[in-house]
Length: 115
Image (tube, rainbow, N blue to C red; front, side):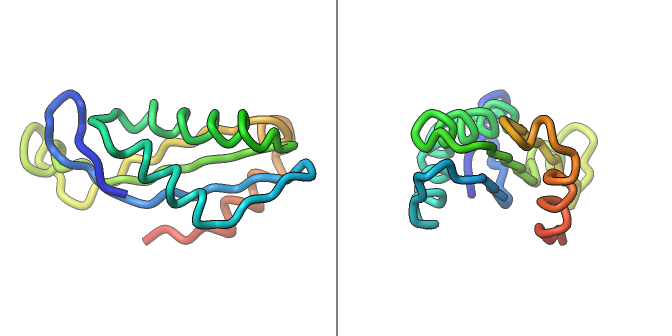
Protein backbone atom coordinates (compact mmCIF):
# COMPACT_ATOMS: atom_id res chain seq x y z
CA UNK A 1 0.00 0.00 0.00
CA UNK A 2 0.93 3.62 -0.51
CA UNK A 3 -0.59 6.53 1.39
CA UNK A 4 0.32 9.88 2.91
CA UNK A 5 1.03 10.63 6.55
CA UNK A 6 -1.69 13.01 7.66
CA UNK A 7 0.74 14.79 10.01
CA UNK A 8 3.48 15.55 7.50
CA UNK A 9 1.79 15.04 4.11
CA UNK A 10 4.73 12.83 3.18
CA UNK A 11 4.26 9.29 1.80
CA UNK A 12 4.49 6.08 3.72
CA UNK A 13 4.21 2.65 2.16
CA UNK A 14 4.46 -0.98 3.04
CA UNK A 15 2.76 -4.35 3.34
CA UNK A 16 -0.53 -5.40 4.86
CA UNK A 17 -0.85 -8.89 6.37
CA UNK A 18 -4.39 -10.08 7.07
CA UNK A 19 -5.54 -13.26 8.75
CA UNK A 20 -9.04 -14.30 9.69
CA UNK A 21 -10.91 -17.37 10.87
CA UNK A 22 -14.15 -17.61 8.89
CA UNK A 23 -17.45 -18.06 10.64
CA UNK A 24 -19.24 -19.43 7.58
CA UNK A 25 -18.63 -16.44 5.33
CA UNK A 26 -15.59 -16.28 3.03
CA UNK A 27 -14.55 -13.69 0.43
CA UNK A 28 -12.01 -13.67 -2.38
CA UNK A 29 -8.52 -12.46 -1.58
CA UNK A 30 -8.86 -9.50 -3.95
CA UNK A 31 -11.44 -8.02 -1.55
CA UNK A 32 -8.73 -7.65 1.09
CA UNK A 33 -6.42 -5.90 -1.38
CA UNK A 34 -9.28 -3.55 -2.29
CA UNK A 35 -10.00 -2.85 1.36
CA UNK A 36 -6.37 -1.94 2.01
CA UNK A 37 -6.38 0.27 -1.09
CA UNK A 38 -9.61 1.95 0.01
CA UNK A 39 -8.28 2.78 3.47
CA UNK A 40 -5.07 4.18 2.00
CA UNK A 41 -6.77 6.63 -0.37
CA UNK A 42 -6.79 9.48 2.11
CA UNK A 43 -4.03 10.82 4.35
CA UNK A 44 -3.68 8.41 7.26
CA UNK A 45 -1.88 7.43 10.38
CA UNK A 46 -0.78 3.82 10.38
CA UNK A 47 -2.46 2.95 13.68
CA UNK A 48 -5.88 4.11 12.50
CA UNK A 49 -5.48 2.42 9.12
CA UNK A 50 -4.72 -0.91 10.85
CA UNK A 51 -7.82 -0.53 13.03
CA UNK A 52 -10.06 0.48 10.11
CA UNK A 53 -9.07 -2.62 8.12
CA UNK A 54 -9.67 -4.96 11.07
CA UNK A 55 -13.00 -3.31 11.94
CA UNK A 56 -14.25 -3.53 8.35
CA UNK A 57 -13.44 -7.26 8.16
CA UNK A 58 -15.06 -7.85 11.54
CA UNK A 59 -18.21 -5.89 10.65
CA UNK A 60 -18.76 -7.41 7.21
CA UNK A 61 -17.61 -11.02 7.65
CA UNK A 62 -18.22 -11.45 11.39
CA UNK A 63 -15.33 -13.94 11.60
CA UNK A 64 -14.34 -15.90 14.68
CA UNK A 65 -11.14 -13.89 14.70
CA UNK A 66 -9.20 -11.34 12.67
CA UNK A 67 -5.64 -10.07 12.82
CA UNK A 68 -4.15 -7.25 10.75
CA UNK A 69 -0.48 -6.28 10.71
CA UNK A 70 0.83 -3.33 8.73
CA UNK A 71 4.54 -2.79 8.28
CA UNK A 72 5.51 0.46 6.66
CA UNK A 73 8.38 2.75 5.89
CA UNK A 74 7.55 6.37 6.62
CA UNK A 75 9.42 8.85 4.45
CA UNK A 76 8.95 11.45 7.18
CA UNK A 77 11.44 9.36 9.19
CA UNK A 78 13.81 9.11 6.22
CA UNK A 79 13.77 12.65 4.91
CA UNK A 80 13.27 14.73 8.04
CA UNK A 81 13.60 14.39 11.79
CA UNK A 82 15.70 11.35 12.73
CA UNK A 83 16.64 10.60 9.10
CA UNK A 84 16.71 6.81 9.46
CA UNK A 85 16.00 5.29 6.02
CA UNK A 86 14.86 1.68 6.00
CA UNK A 87 13.23 1.89 9.43
CA UNK A 88 9.88 0.09 9.48
CA UNK A 89 6.99 0.65 11.81
CA UNK A 90 4.78 -2.35 12.59
CA UNK A 91 1.23 -2.11 13.93
CA UNK A 92 -1.06 -5.03 14.76
CA UNK A 93 -4.73 -5.32 15.72
CA UNK A 94 -6.11 -8.60 17.09
CA UNK A 95 -9.81 -9.36 17.46
CA UNK A 96 -11.85 -12.37 18.50
CA UNK A 97 -9.89 -15.62 18.78
CA UNK A 98 -6.67 -13.86 17.81
CA UNK A 99 -7.03 -11.61 20.87
CA UNK A 100 -7.40 -14.55 23.24
CA UNK A 101 -5.33 -17.38 21.69
CA UNK A 102 -1.59 -16.79 21.75
CA UNK A 103 -0.86 -19.87 19.62
CA UNK A 104 -2.99 -18.47 16.75
CA UNK A 105 -1.05 -15.21 16.86
CA UNK A 106 2.25 -17.10 16.85
CA UNK A 107 1.11 -19.14 13.84
CA UNK A 108 0.13 -15.95 12.01
CA UNK A 109 3.50 -14.33 12.82
CA UNK A 110 5.38 -17.37 11.50
CA UNK A 111 3.38 -17.29 8.27
CA UNK A 112 4.31 -13.73 7.29
CA UNK A 113 7.71 -12.88 5.93
CA UNK A 114 9.36 -9.63 6.82
CA UNK A 115 12.23 -8.29 4.74
